[in-house]
Length: 238
Image (cartoon, rainbow, N blue to C red; front, side):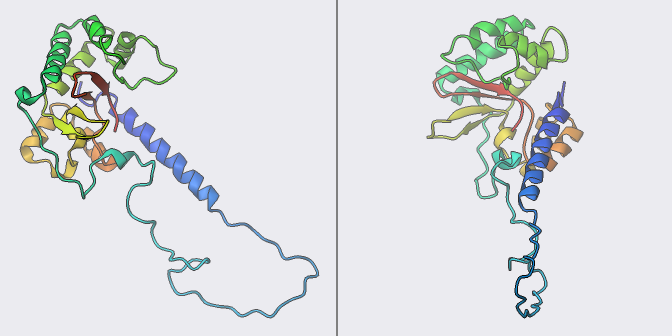
């Protein structure tokens, strides 16, 4: 169950970076300008550029540090952001958030994925499950397609484990404000304590974690609930 579909997630993100890098290289290719025939020759002087300078006078060094605008790691906490406060006390959640979390957990632990259907349909908008346009419009059928078993019980187990992890109150005071599980989705991976690493390995394998460190962000499943108790998402990725 741990590490479910992680290689595919990282592979998709890596492909996007490769395509982006390829496009940039093509755009920056030099143009071969040929001299005009019979043009009057003008004496020229060779100027030796200082080491490390490119033809246009810019330094020929490594690209500026930091993620590109479409970098998959852009969702990870930056070094300037304070470490988020991790909560384990579910009684601190707003009543509507507590209720929805309890309802989802109770449904997941029945082992019957159909129990999630009335919860998914109860809000004005269904939660974001990470489906693409070509995927089935039936949320239960889509969740089953993510599971390693035909009945969707693996995905129910993942959903349960995620909601039983510590959480953070994210994007407070913005339209995107949510309560987010697990907190690893917003916590710097390089700042996890030994005890927090044990918590992480309840969801992932050590090899999964190594891949995430290379990627720069937590990529496994997460759940978010709005402050007024609406199920916002259950999906993997950054």
